[in-house]
Image 1 (cartoon, one colour):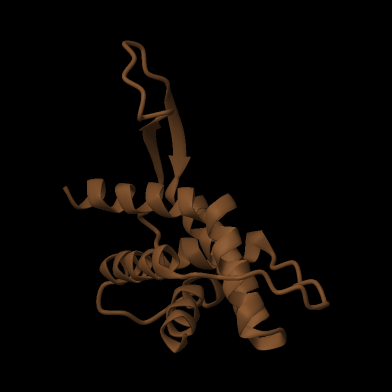
Image 2 (cartoon, rainbow, N blue to C red):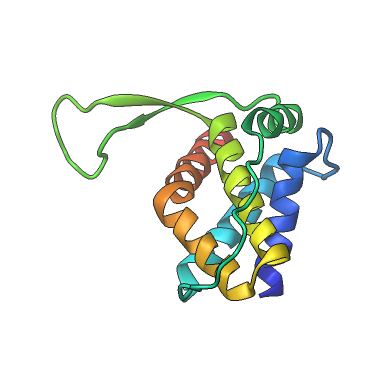
Length: 151
């Protein structure tokens, strides 16, 4: 479990610190997100019915400001809505790499809080739940954006 915690700690730095040191931030965040996605896909989490305090509300705007500082060249992109359907007039949607990364980090800060303030079982379940209902789509979109950015 320490691998998951370490990944979360490093990824969240990009949203909690304005000038994260890294040889290549784009390569690093891409690799970290691939690793965290692998952790999610391979994790069997069970619901913890313990009674815990609710995690704090991590402020989106402050996280976004740090993400923008760490990745000033990230921006908007297009993707196809319902890409699994082949239709002649596919609907394009606009995405935002900064928003994707901000949302991922915000969710991971909640998981980090759960690791520090509840049980490991609860934190793992919270991680899987947030990935399934929210972060996974942002992560996949973001990874596609980085792939396209690199050519």
